[in-house]
Length: 312
Image 1: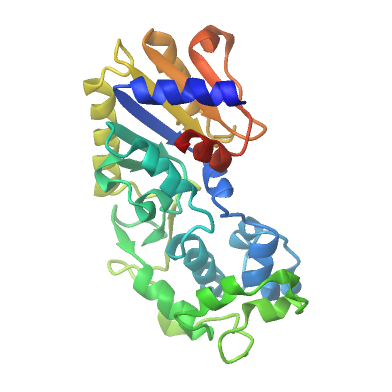
Image 2 (image 1 turned 180 degrees about the horizontal axis):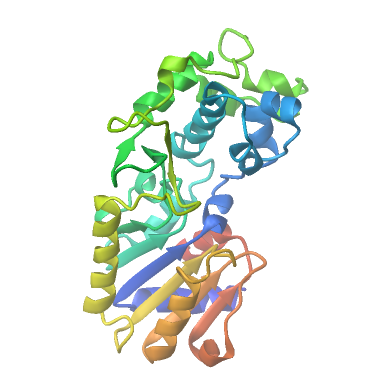
C-alpha cells in the first residue's frame, strides 16, 4: 500500500485541479456509523420498543404520530448534523487540498465538509442536507434551516444543550445498561415524543414538513442546490476536466448505490482526458474498469488511515 500512497501523493501534488467525490464511506471512516455503539447510545429506547437495529431502519419506521416521528428524527439530525464527527478525517482531507484548486461533489447529507472548513462555494451536496426542512407535498421549491427547531425538540425530550458532550464521554464499556447511555444530565430517561407545537409545518400550505433528503420525487432542489450544481459544472468546464487539463479525480467511499452521480462520471472523464488521474480509496470496494487502469490508483483501505499517511 505504501507504493500506492506514494503514487497518490505525486498525483495530488502535480494536479492543477482536484475534484473530490465522496460517499458514505468517508463519513463512516470519520466515525459517523449508523449502528453499533452510536445507535445504542442515542436510540436504545426506540430499539427496545420497535426492534430495529440501526438508525436507517428507525428513520423509515411508520410511527403512529408526528410527535414520535420527530422525536426520533430530531435525535437523528442532532447527532449526525450538528455534532462533530468523532475522528478528524474531513479535517485531514482539507489539509491536503487547502490552497489547491478543488471542488467537492458528495452524496453525503451530514454537512461534514462545511463543518471541517471546506469553502462552501466549492461544495455540491447532490442528495440534500440533514439541516434542512422542506414542505412534504411539496407545495413550493424552497428549503428551511432546521437547527433552532431541532435543538428545541432535542431539549423537549429532556436532553440538555451540552448533553452530547456528556453522552460522548460515556462508554458502552462502562458496564452501565444501554438505556443509561441516553439519559440527560439529571439522569432522567428522555421522552420519546415531542410537544405537538414543535411539529414543523409548511409556512405556505400548513402541511407537515419533511426532511430535505432525496428519497422520492418530492425532493426539493432549491435555489442553493441549483447554484451549487452550476458551480460544479462550471468548474469542470473551466478546468477542462474532461478535455486535457491536469486533474485528479479523488473518489472517497463511494459505493454502488448511486454510481451515476460520482463514480461513472469520474471514470468517463478520466477516459476522455489523457492528463487525468482517477484515484479511489474505499475499504473493500476499490476497483476500476480496464479502460483506465493505466492512469488509476485504487487503494483498498480505511480512508482516514490513508489520508494520515498522505499527510506524512
